[in-house]
Image (cartoon, rainbow, N blue to C red; front, side, top):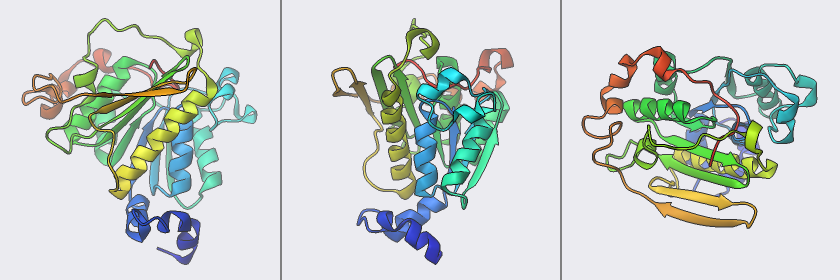
Length: 275
């Protein structure tokens, strides 16, 4: 670690639980953030400022005027710019010493699988169930920790799915694919601006803890926030032995999901999503 890094990250280094070794692990980490909107914005900003060594930021959308109410990576001057590139500019301004890779594309199939394989930690900041399930399968396949958040209206949620532990549940264990779940979007239902900041910042906190190897993650716990009443509650859950993704014969563990048709897998990365 250089003298400049020792100074920049000194307030982390002063933490007994983190110290120089923890900060060095953070500096050596590659985080994949899927979605550069309401959740991805604060998550990316805090990971960059904290010194995550490499951030791959993926979003196929462009900055819209309506995004500015909550998507703090972007500015009015960058309306119309690709969100991934706008995010790169914002992150580079905060910490020019880290590597930032902006990708303006839809993630699915082999492209998603390869990106997850290359990362150490994955943050799901997307806006639809199809993408979330695809990311989960890739994370199960490569045993990469997944930090997943959601925010809509005044309701937020966050959990960690860390399949490096054999007894850990995956996203599909908690939210089985194919169930009759209502898909709601910010464009239709609205979202309280600070809520995305709260959840996105917590995603960054969980990712940094995983990177540094400190504390207890949210694996097996789902935190739910009612921001209107400012009340939190915790739901504990376990791995589903019969899960079709992370179970013994699940398609995530076997990589069988890659054989599905591209039409079944393809789904855009977005900004915020149902809670």
